[in-house]
Amino acid sequence: MATITIVGVGPGDPDLLTLKAKDVIRRADYVAGFDTVLGPVRRWITGEAMPMRYRDQEDVLERLAAHAQAGKNCVVCAWGDLNFSSRELLDRVRRRAEVELIPGISSVQVACARLGLTMETSMFITLHARDGHEEGLRELAENLKRRTRNLIVLPRPFDLMPANIASLLLEKGIAADTPLWALQRLSLDGEIIAEYTLASLADEDADFSDLTILAFPAGG
Image (cartoon, rainbow, N blue to C red; front, side, top):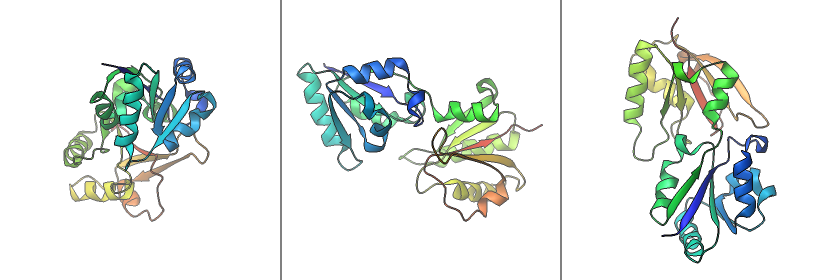
């Protein structure tokens, strides 16, 4: 079976792309990825770019797999680090080819750096799942009641965003004065880091970027 390389391109700042990722992209005959993901790496694409959208990603990946079968050097680019939020894309590629993974910097790592949090005292919970979010919300609520670790939460664009998450947590009995940060567009122009309580976040009328992370500090 042919091999396709999947590259984590980081949170969006081209300066955070790893040297190995740049080299692999430069040497590729074909580079596929969602158009917004290809933006930060276009300067290193010397082969053919294959932008895709949700509605045509299966067709694009089929064509990419055919190129790989023909012996071409093929790459798929994904946001951040491949181990955080790229499961569905990885599964789609694995159905067509063997994969080589090149990890990248994740927005979670950037969030920890901005807030001075250590990964060994933190827990990551993603709600970015197309097969439902109830298990993630349950896990989040249970850990917020204990607050023994920092909780770093990835919302689900566009239907499970920060204010919605806060409202659901209040319904689950989490204290209204629970502190948290909302971090938007990390490493990009327009980066915003704001402190909230659960109640104030639930009442927030402003729109949030789809590139948002919530961070709940451990209790004192």
